[in-house]
Amino acid sequence: MRGMTHRSWGVALVVLIITGSATAADAPPKRTASHPDLSGYWWLSDKIPADKKLTQRLPANTVLLADTGAPEFPRGEYGGLKVKPAALAAAEKWDPREDMSLSNACKPPSIVYAMQGPFPMEIYQGTELIIIKLEYFDMMRVVFMDGRKPDASTPDSKTGFSVGRWEGDTLVVDTTHLEAATITNNGLSHSNKVHVIERFRLSEDGSELHATQEFEDPLVLDNRGARFIGWKKKTGDHVYPYECDPTFALEYQNQEKGSKQ
Picture 1 (spheres, rainbow, N blue to C red):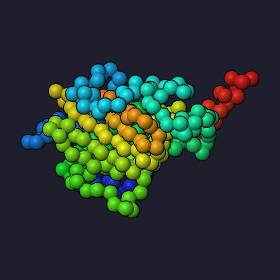
Picture 2 (tube, helix red, strand yellow):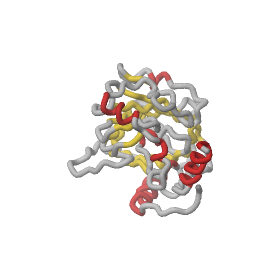
Picture 3 (cartoon, one colour):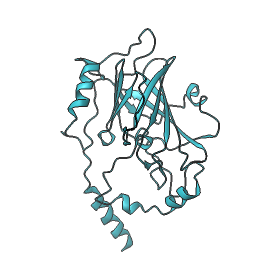
Picture 4 (cartoon, rainbow, N blue to C red):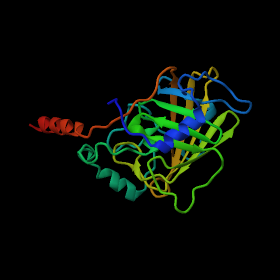
């Protein structure tokens, strides 16, 4: 599903400003005087062991989900998340056939699910902004590094409002204002009150990017969830347009009909 697609001129201008003429994937790893440069093309890998420097920072009452990448929990399994009764009742009513309808097949998830999906991403790192460009559903994240806060008119979206800061060699990204969307792709969804904190750090040789994604939702969960996510760096490559085609849902529906005959 790769080809040409429309792009926002505003976001494109931001990328050009913060990256100059060089591409993120071709830029050599470097470290500024105060923190590392996470720029580059990153491919998700399930072969990277959890980074203890990150996982040990997860707060109490947090469960580490084991569904990063292609693996997914079966129906009714939520990886140790303590789901509130109303949210659990809604999850138990989940019908995967509704997700695989023409109207829903190409609806993007939020970053809670998208960041751990088995697709690459590019990072363009500037001083005032960091751009995270996901291949999955062509999602573009803007991380504000100037300390700004969302205002009363800030809308919810699938990428939310992200503010970043450095804690030593670790980038900490705090995200709010996310639209309700799936957590585990099996019926359990977060609300628009979910709060996400991500921590990103490079491996010692700069060839890997490690992250934890922790989230809490007062309307859905009685504990906190987290994932460890690891990516390997690859030079000279870029993410491509996702170009979701909803007609693939028809094939799924035909397979469902065939299995019942």
